[in-house]
Amino acid sequence: MEVRDKVVIVTGAAAGIGRGVAEEFVLRGAIVLIADIDVEHGEATAEQLRRSGNRGFFIPVDVSDGRQVRAMVERVIDNFGRIDTLVNNAGVVLFKPLLDMEESEWDHLLSVDLKGAFLCSKQVLPTMMQQGSGVILNIASNHALSTLPDSEAYAAAKSAMVAFTKSLALSYGPKGIRSVAICPGFTDTPHYQRWLQDVEDPKARERETLRLHPLGRIVSPADVGKLAVFLASEDASMITGTSVVLDGGVSAQLYVSE
Ligand SMILES: NC(=O)c1ccc[n+]([C@@H]2O[C@H](COP(=O)([O-])OP(=O)(O)OC[C@H]3O[C@@H](n4cnc5c(N)ncnc54)[C@H](O)[C@@H]3O)[C@@H](O)[C@H]2O)c1
Image (cartoon, rainbow, N blue to C red; front, side, top):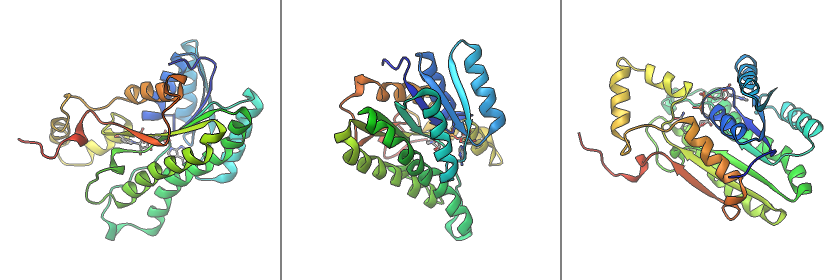
């Protein structure tokens, strides 16, 4: 699990899973770039990581904008000279009946969740190839494997992320670069809290969600962070072109009784 002094870009790290991933990397001595569209929370996260004596820096970026992504990656290389790990985590979620979904909403979700991973990977790959090493971790979702009604755009983006990961691993494996997707289940983030509040009885939704979990709790951002650290480390040097499901057993079951 050695990632000391590694240079790690985590997109969407101002909150939620990305923040949990950033925290786990800095705890182990990595240099972490918090790349997020949310300036206020991105700066606050970086400030908090630095106050605890660690190395976290904020860089504003909209991952769906190729020009901004190129500028972000150039800044990282100018300042730190290398990029060891990219975590493509930034994402937006929209669950909505297909018939009500606007073309612009479909485009926005795919632009952030999928095109963002393409743009960021494209910009870091030349540096990783020069180094002869690098790891690209893609935060997909268990929606890539099984999904729910009214999730067409999100499920499409996340299963595409898994396929993207496999091809990336084949193309750049010979250059020393690995690529792995992480498929978290219900994870306690601002997004999850918004989803709970989206119904008349949030407590009932929370109880129902917990019932799906054989381990009796949902995933935490730190759980995802610990897995990401392992996958980025040399201990995972033979893991590439695959995905790891991190959902506390939710997707293992066919049926949940009352
Ligand atoms: N929370 C869950 O239950 C869950 C489960 C599986 C997968 N995921 C995935 O994990 C990732 C993070 O989810 P979360 O729950 O932490 O979400 P969140 O909404 O709590 O946080 C998302 C972060 O991404 C940033 N972001 C949004 N658009 C951006 C853009 N265009 N450019 C840069 N940054 C942007 C936001 O500012 C925010 O900081 C997403 O890809 C999501 O699909 C979440």
